[in-house]
Amino acid sequence: MRIEQDLKLGFKDVLFRPKRSNLKSRSQVELTRDFTFKHSGRQWSGVPVIAANMDSVGSFKMGKVLAEHGCLTAIHKHYTVADWAAFVAESETKTLNNVMVSTGTSDADFQKTQDIMALSDEFVFICIDIANGYSEHLVEYVQRVRAAFPDKVISAGNVVTGDMVEELILAGADIVKVGIGPGSVCTTRVKTGVGYPQLSAIIECADAAHGLGGRIIGDGGCSCAGDVSKAFGGGADFVMLGGMLAGHTESGGEVIEQDGKQFMKFYGMSSESAMAKHSGGVAKYRAAEGKTVLLPFRGTVNDTISDILGGVRSTCTYVGAAQLKELTKRTTFIRVQEQENNVFGKE
Ligand code: 5GP
Image (cartoon, rainbow, N blue to C red; front, side, top):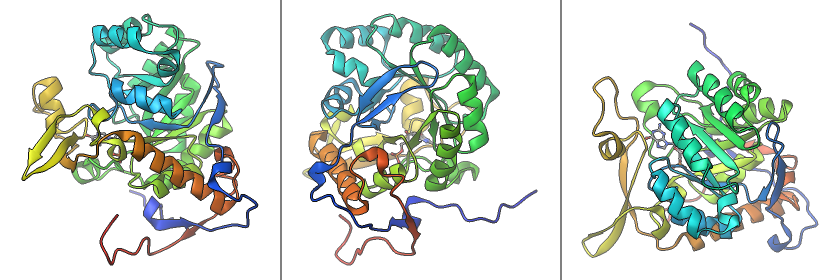
């Protein structure tokens, strides 16, 4: 047994140190980034915020609306090929360029991904997603998908350490998805004791990925726009959001009325709710590693995403970054033991 003594940090452990800046207004900040990806050689321009591939977040409706903001949506893997065909028929190029086709790692998943990708040349991204990205099977699967789709951008995860980031990039991933345990409806840390504070995971994994020309997605743990900025400041190329984009018209859940108020169900993809819906219940050998919550219904996601992007722009003005790309270079984090003042309650 070994203990690593250096303290790992989460978003709540730091704040940005403000820096002199000649930016007058947040309207001068450019959030669009231009990427050319390592293996596929593909170029993509957009605002690198991604709706999570959860079935109460990453819906087709979410994909359409977020594409209008330049953002990405990882569409959850429970739509059928026929659903995808209908989506392709009604969608503009911009929407198709800004959705990620999510997949697990079984043979059936592989076949389904091939069937979906065959529906349109406009798809750019494939998101290979399993809870524990440390499995050798994931590495082999990434190699297989890379061989089948040499010119598509492949994201693979989830992992939290540099060694595994490097292995996935060398296997053919353009992007590695980073995060084990930080999610708002994740119970992995409680059920297994496994995890890694998300800001440190991002900082360490970004360093490993960038050294090889790869990219990372900071996935999970953002509870406010400031956390999204901290993820970018730590070196995340993309930031994936679940809970912050859940509970909206586009999130793909039912609105529930209770005591005259409206709510929407939000649940982890390994929760009992998800397993009951998609796999006929929790298999005997495993425990649910996600929870189900009721969120106040928040209407359309347009205001929420504008608010998040406005927050990130504002961070950039505080540290003098004219473009989102510069944010990490302009970032000095200070370790803190306080965050916001909650004397009148939380926002
Ligand atoms: P959030 O933005 O809500 O904090 O985190 C979203 C992320 O949580 C997702 O992108 C995914 O990586 C992770 N996640 C989603 N569902 C589950 C689950 O049931 N269990 C665990 N461990 N993680 C989940």
